[in-house]
Picture (spheres, rainbow, N blue to C red):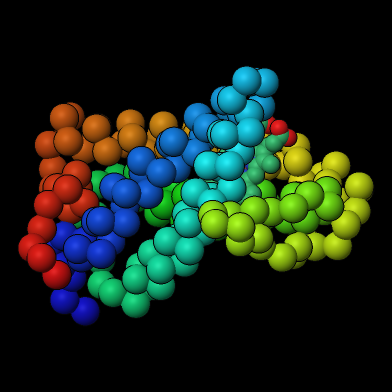
Length: 178
Ligand code: HEM
């Protein structure tokens, strides 16, 4: 397969838009559990933005699996190639799992799940205090894992851009209009 120089335009747009949305979600999530004053407003933003991330993550995964991607530099040590691939698939898994767990935990808790304009999502798991008791701490623990993985991803991107000075950062930062 002929591999392109850069990720395609859809992959690049989704990468940067979702980076902003996910980091926002981590801080909104942390903010709403510590703030009594802004909890209602932050939660009203957290739910629909989380569902938007879920929908965009599905589009992004389909695009990732069906379109060719640029190769990592051939001189990159095997351990770093492995770390890159493992962390990318972990990020995909967490982008999908975090919103689904948030949705499932509200369902298990028997809470309404309002979006925008009076629309509500249906419950995806039956009402169960035990399930809520598992899903609520899981949502918090995976948020820490997501935050740490993003920090590692950012560190690796800057290592490529500033230390190795190879083409990896540019593969996601620039390219043609396709
Ligand atoms: C990428 C998507 C998401 C991210 C990164 C995220 C992140 C977070 C974080 C960091 C917290 C605070 C956790 C803690 O301190 O224990 C949190 C709490 C919460 N999230 Fe999410 N979340 C996402 C999606 C969702 C979705 C889709 C829903 C619901 C539809 C949701 C509902 C909630 C609720 C209800 C809480 C805690 C409320 C409480 O018990 O105080 N989240 N989230």
